[in-house]
Image (cartoon, rainbow, N blue to C red; front, side, top):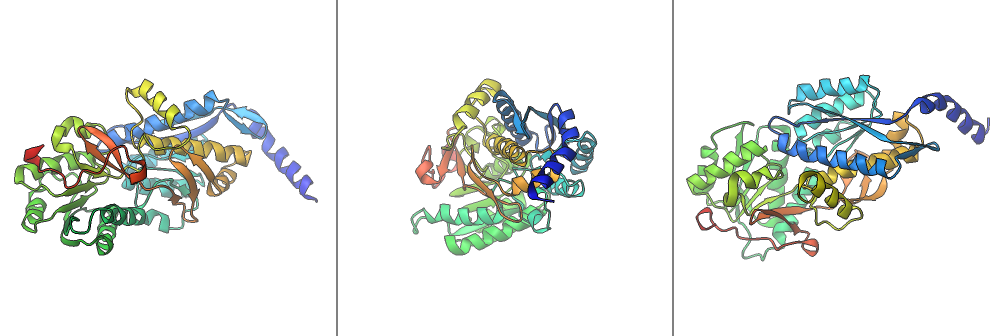
Length: 393
């Protein structure tokens, strides 16, 4: 049988399912409530706008037939057990791909389900690299990971004059796999950036009292504080830092300061924190203008930082389905793996382990606004360093 005959046979086998399909059903499990609710709202907005834009452009060409994307989105309430059950619910509904939520622990639970169901999974807003070392073939993430953050942290601090850089660091380590992973990464970053980790203290997610960690950091004269708290934990942390008189030159917190509620709840006390959300609405890439306009209309402001990477997931998935020319999940998986495209977060490719090759971005809250401060050639404002003490804001 020649190659043409094989291709025709494959088309004939797939044709009944393709002919019956009226939409391309995509499932998403996102935390809209619970401790990750603020981040989940950004993910949801990115997905919904992305689907709207794909469908407004005519949908996806699947083997010569234009089909719209149908997004089925469920709330897991920031509970990993419910993440698993909601994904299984979506599998029963015949989704061809999964879109993930917010938070490394939820993604870790989801990745196993996607692998079991042989369903491609695209997720952002998680930097845990460990998930990608477990041999999962269906997991893809166009989002930076702990090793990327380690290098970017060293680069960011390396741009500060050597005599002014932080010398002593405190790591507030969440008792999770990602917390341990990033504590190691940030300790390693210090070798290049010139700081020593004097305090590395653990806390359980949902903790209400961070005074022991803060007082140890204060006693060590830490001029750099690093952490990755959930939004509620991060806000509590900053309030207690102010109360106990810890004002480091730089406060770098991953995850917690991403949602707009950070500034709303903390006011000026939330300023000058540096965050690594993976994107900013001033990033220069095709489609950013249209995304911002749609987000402004939907939410009342330019796209939030996690909305961009979420939107990019839809772009990547739509392109992969079109390239696969099929709704077969394995073909879609292979097309995602071969991604070489430009999205609103810039060019995206995937390594063999499913991690994305993406641009590093640092953002800083300045005067109640999230400003892009790194890379410097794309910055909307210069990095404010050292940060003024809480009492002088």
